[in-house]
Image 1: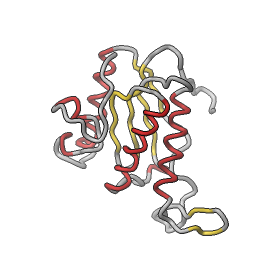
Image 2: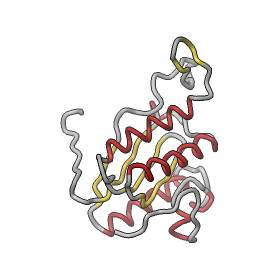
Image 3: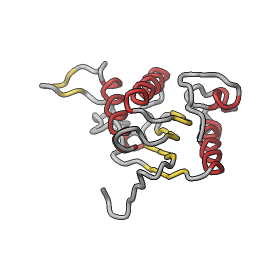
Length: 176
């Protein structure tokens, strides 16, 4: 871990997490890729036992608002989630050589070395006000980026759960 980067776990705080695709490339730009991500997020949540209070999947990054898992840390959750999503999204590619999978291509036409950036940003959410702030930030992200005119038009987020009572792809764990 780089010097100066500190993670604060074990205090019962929620965690606002942001992580990006490799070189911030839009590797989640397709409906299929975003659907796979959300499906895997649901599976990992169930298996690792953390509460999910909000999310948005953007073409090149993801925001999550989550609790710590029953066992492990948000770091172990992210490791598992990123690994599974990368494997699923690369599974359709034909093997290049002995045991190697061809990664998606960068704009240069060269295969990518990775699917995800190695690091992630983690902010401890310690109050109801901060929780609301982070949820609003996530839900506004697709509008601010010009992907849609209203958060209701972006189905890869928890906006519908909070504002119109729709389950959407994933039900949120309310409370706290």
